[in-house]
Length: 157
Image (tube, rainbow, N blue to C red; front, top):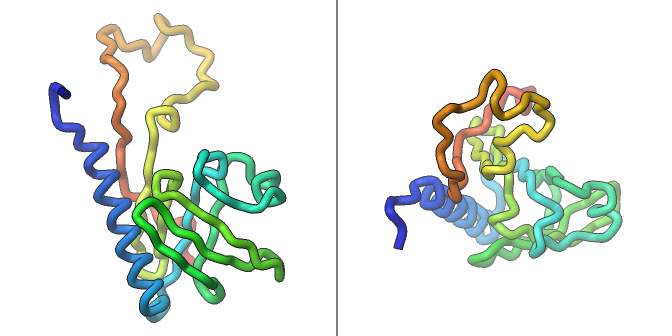
């Protein structure tokens, strides 16, 4: 039994539930108005499914856009599959919710970003542990993932 409430994990579950609900609505009724989605996901996730040429081209992460043309959207409790057009080559993708790194709808300036503990750590920092920036009172590593709203400035026209 845990010693505390893992709010980060609970928030991630709620945010992924929100994405699922939005995609279920789009599956049923289509994209309303000017809504469209930028979805960045981990292409190396063990349950993600994409064509070999896409995983070769995007070995770490990939951003897809659901806007003018998408087909066969199928939403499940664990993820969704959709056919998207890549330079006149339709490709079917399966994206598990827990592979999603960002979900943005720039038409209404809405965005979610999922960060893992590994994303927060900068492996390129050559500073030794006892040098500047060293925490003299280290805390145990956290198992939860922090959630935050993503800035939409880079998606504005």
